[in-house]
Image 1 (cartoon, rainbow, N blue to C red):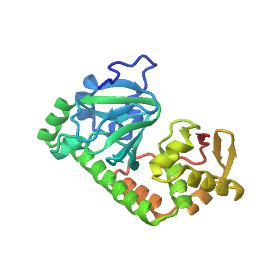
Image 2 (cartoon, rainbow, N blue to C red):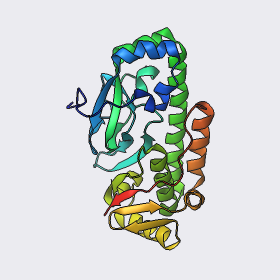
Image 3 (cartoon, rainbow, N blue to C red):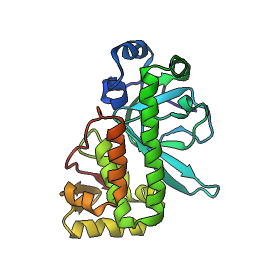
Length: 256
């Protein structure tokens, strides 16, 4: 797999990732020499479903979608991982292979940790493993809630949830994403996403210009979202209370 092996951009702080920031001092000192920054472009496939990966990835500025892909090429997003989490939890669950395809949605940096060190942490059964297991439970909650959301809630509700999810994991005031890409993530037609976005604009929740969506009223956007967003956020903060709370009022870029 053609993954970048060394960052060519300015080095970022690994502790921009909330899990790395929550590591106890002893685990942090043990991990730091092995953490390597890599830079991912939007659309980069980090790993394929059912494949083995040599690394666990901790995003700092990148945002990665975990996708379920059908035999005819259809895709649907089952979870989003940003600076709140990690890609590769199967390593600590004994499965050894990726459960889903992982694709970069927002370009940025990750720090990767070799699978051999992850295996050692599992065998050590210390504080780092407990932290990763709590995050895994949070991720499972997100996957389960996403399945219910895709089945029972309207495109309007799903779009509001997805915009809020992107806002929470963004590290700048702008996030690039095409309408076609959003439709693919939600598993709906592009026309449905366009109609939902226009409705939010007419109601004053967002401002839409060519290729640009600014969230004008986060509180009202939360009200438009289904209960899935609040349920996932509540469980994440319960399991990982040191996590940074959702950021208010962040403009979004969505290319036409």
